[in-house]
Image 1 (tube, rainbow, N blue to C red):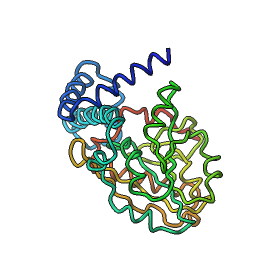
Image 2 (cartoon, rainbow, N blue to C red):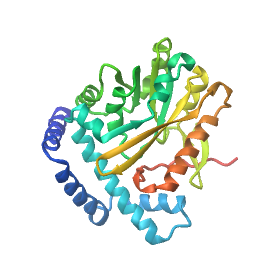
Image 3 (cartoon, one colour):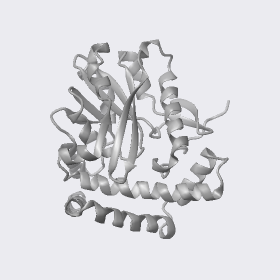
Image 4 (cartoon, one colour):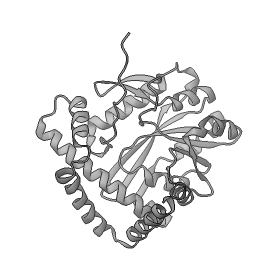
Amino acid sequence: MQYISYLFFRGVVFLFGWMPFSMIYVLSDFITFLLYHVFRYRKTLVWNNLKRSFPNKTDAELKHIVYEQYRNFSDILFESFKGFTMDIETMKARYVFLHPELLNQDTSAGGSSILMASHYSNWEWGVICMSSYYNRMILGFYKPIKNKYIDNYVKTKRGSERMQLVSIVDTKSVFEQYKNQACAYALVADQNPSSPNSHWIKFLNQDTVCLHGGDKYARQTGYPVFFLDMNRVKRGHYTVDIEYLVRNPLECAEGEITKKFMARLERKLIENPNNWLWTHNRWKHKKQIG
């Protein structure tokens, strides 16, 4: 059954590889309409997430955000399929990293660094493009896909000589394995942890449990931490601004880096909430009082 699913997946990749972007976005608009008006995909969850996060916004404003976040969801999904067949030069013309010299010139902690990103705009293309801007090994942590055939395909297509996808299960061993080599460790850090026993942060007016891996390994290694500020310039075109989040993690208390990351992400979402994945059940864990 897994192999049949894999063949279907490859067929979809082939189809999107053939389709021009103009057609892809027509299809994305149609799927957006279906998700919002017909299937109402997690619409109650999305609405409640937004209502709690932005209590001062009117219902009309929230409805606009709900619709636009479905469009963002559809665009990212279809662009991800398209990305499997795009050559790197075409993708780089559409996905530009700003100020990559910050990473390449930083020689603190042996030249290694930790990159913290979020599910904002198109993070999928960033995995593929980044090795073209960075002159060291990049280790991107991800949650493996249950279908082993699709998982192997994704790892192969998104990997390169200087880019390797590694399971989040292997985070500790990977940091140990590459400790004597200059690398960038890329983490999508706004995911919901499987356990509520982690860092709790007040985020968008709500008690929010957060992944603590970036905080933990930055303080252990002393690697500087960068925030990847992703922006959609227009459909199918993105920029990523690389900025320092923490220059010297050894001076930080436990949880401080997590707080800085979530505070920076919060400013981003207040500025433009449309391009985040509000369909995630981000607040399913509730903080225990007492």
